[in-house]
Amino acid sequence: MDASEQLAARKVRFVDVLRALPKLAPDGLRMARGAVGLVTLKPTTKDSIGHIFQRAAAEHPERPFLRFEDTEITYDQANLLVNQYASVYAAHGVGPGSTVAVMAGNRPETLLAALAGVKLGAAVGMINTNQRGDVLDHSVRLLNATVLVAGRDYREALDEVTTPKILDLETLANGATSTANPAVTATLTASITAFYIFTSGTTGMPKASSMSHFRWLKSMAGIGGLGVRLRADDTLYCCLPLYHNNALTVSLSSVLSAGATLALGRSFSASRFWDDVVRTRSTAFCYIGELCRYLLNQPPRAIEREHKVRVVVGNGLRPEIWHEFTERFGIKRVAEFYGASECNLAFINALNIDQTAGTCPLPFAVVEYDPDTGKPKRVGKGLRKVKSGEVGLLLTKVTNRAPFDGYTDADASERKLVRNAFKKDDCWFDTGDLVRMQGFKHVAFVDRLGDTFRWKGENVATTEVEGAIGERPDVEQAVVYGVAVPGTDGKAGMAAVKLRDGARFDGQVLGKHLAERLPTYAIPLFVRVINEVEQTSTFKSRKVDLRDEGYASSVTDPLFVFTGDQYVPWYPSYPDEVAAGRIRV
Image 1 (cartoon, rainbow, N blue to C red):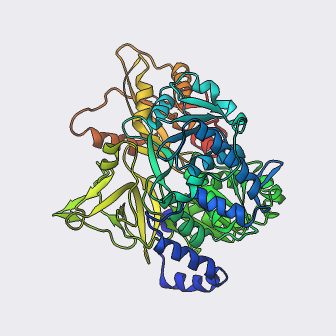
Image 2 (cartoon, rainbow, N blue to C red):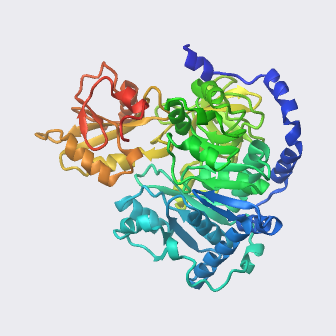
């Protein structure tokens, strides 16, 4: 076992828990409130995101709610703008049970537009701004929204799709008839849908996973109250996109749980990250694993130790860089968590133990799985749990207190459930993720299974990429999978392509085609031209073989790599250039 494997295999022991407990004392009251919230919150609870925000604005109107570039907006100012947006929505027929679609970049108006929708009891569908063409058209149709709010930068992309009534984000408040709190907000229950967050679909198109107010409020109590534990004078910096739960749920709920301030970044930039953190006077920030690695790849600067950050929250901080990251940047506490847009529960590192995604008080199981299918392995009538220190497939129990909100597609929802797993009529959510049992109910994320892989902080559906490659007339068939690139997080895309008889691989044409059809993070970095794609009953195991072979020196098939606009023949330094960020992908 090498050094990185030893780090990944880290176990949580009694001494780790004992050492952590005294440091929790100053946050005891906050944690108690979070725990009470988790225990008492029910789907029938008459509370909602809009109501939480509305109350915060009434309790501390002059406190800053948002910082963005050179702008600061107080809670009261933000609430009045949200109410204006809501009155415009209502005039277009938006109310409980309807949907508002939002396609706009990171800026205060985008967040306020989302809050306006949930105040009215509508579900807000946050469209991934990287989507284009057929994928974007599919997502818009899936939402069946009453109105679509679009930022100026995205109107051109929407010209090619069938859209509902479009409202310009920049002029949304024009024509507002009221700044009063909508009466319906106080009547909403936690069970209704708050957001639709798009995730990669195994059928080739994105799925819209439902996020109820109940699950969002549980995140506020669990991740925000027990894990992050912000104070009223804290500012949390978030430069992750608002169409992701890391921003919309984790960051926003952590801020609202304390009445703190959210500093919103337009986008992530490794070179200006610490400048933004210092400029916004941030004391916390939200991360994904790739962000941490990119920061470590930057040359040291004095400003990276001039910040006031005392806690960070996010997912994907890999064990092999955990200590380097916290020591170089002086990070005192890491609230690493594990969760997914559609998952019915989350893990949080509340005890600040290193190299763990933390624990969860709700029922879960880590079970043996079939590596060929990625599904739980049945032993007799049930499933078998792995031992402490072992890796298995994570299942989370579906109960009244931890319901599975599902997708807009009922069949897709059912396929994610495992029934009769340990006893008759029980029901579990299949996360599709491998985790390591670390002891004391702690887990560490290991890898993603199935027909998706994670790259650049995004889930990539292999079938979506295969479909885009298959549109080329010179391609007979393509198989797509994720491969590891040393020094990076997640898996980069790789395609094994069989050309039609007589066709020649054209890296420039394929690169241009995929750049037009796919988000940048979904474009395969590696293309291997093969003579045959097996389609027998053993096809799945062949795909596993291709993934295992990757781009190793033993591969004798023609191999090409993506350089930002085209595919060129493989060269040995390419993986290092990807890890160093020198390839524009």
